[in-house]
View (cartoon, rainbow, N blue to C red):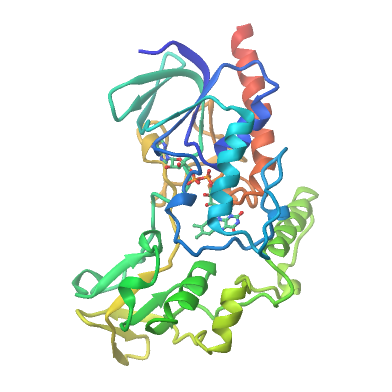
Length: 356
Ligand code: FAD
């Protein structure tokens, strides 16, 4: 059993690094543990051609900017290199290949159990485990009986396995649009979306979504109502690959699906269409299984928080999971704001504990 530290951060992706940045000036004795072999959080698991939806300048963590990319939008490899460099630059205390399976609270001390049987002890915990390990696929009748290739976007690396096939892509977000753009080069594609896909205009990018989220956040903070509909922005960023695919006219949604059969999709209007593969670009839940014995979680793994502070268990914070842990907190540029506030709260919490 290791000695008790002030703080353990579970997860070693961008959210943990942003917290680490603000912890540098604190006196806290802390450790980051991450279940991956290497740096970069979940980014190394994304598909090979992934490009970010904002330029480098708007894809940076606090303190050290992502180097300017030669392309309009940095590649995922550039994002990974940046995160690894960031980690090295600030020399954070990270232990890798440590998978946290359970967190318990005993006599006011967190006991953090790991897959290899080790147990860490801490006065406070920040959970920063992201969403990637919780791919979400909606309940669709017959889905289990499908005989073709069926993957969630987390498993997608490149279009090779779909060559010459007919592929259904489900989902109207940036992932759906980017995979449709790529797969449609080598396969016949059909697109299912829940609502009409909305595209940003060519001259704006993900930064606008961030600005909009900021304006909404500021309005809400001042108790003012905020009408996002006036912006008519859409949410799909017109990266060069998406623009190229638009020229090929691939972004034609056939609407919702009502069932999947062994070799076909059944559309809402009951038309049946044979397909060989499906890619579910239907989002994620939250990787909080390790907290399930400690706090209540909803069906997606969400924990009840006030900003990032867990309402149910003092001494526990959750950072980087998305809107419920702070606006834009699941983005490179957005996580800094919530990390700064979280670290401030953790430092105060530990200080008070030590005075007791
Ligand atoms: P992660 O990067 O997932 O890091 C969490 C770490 O915790 C991982 O290493 C994970 O393996 C580890 N972990 C999980 N469970 C445990 C456990 N029990 N024990 C120990 N370790 C654990 N954002 C942008 O700013 N710009 C973009 O262009 C952009 N594009 C995106 C495209 C896609 C397809 C996706 C999915 C996301 C994109 N994002 C983008 C969003 C965002 O940057 C990522 O979701 C980001 O990875 C979140 O960082 P994180 O540190 O919170 O989580």
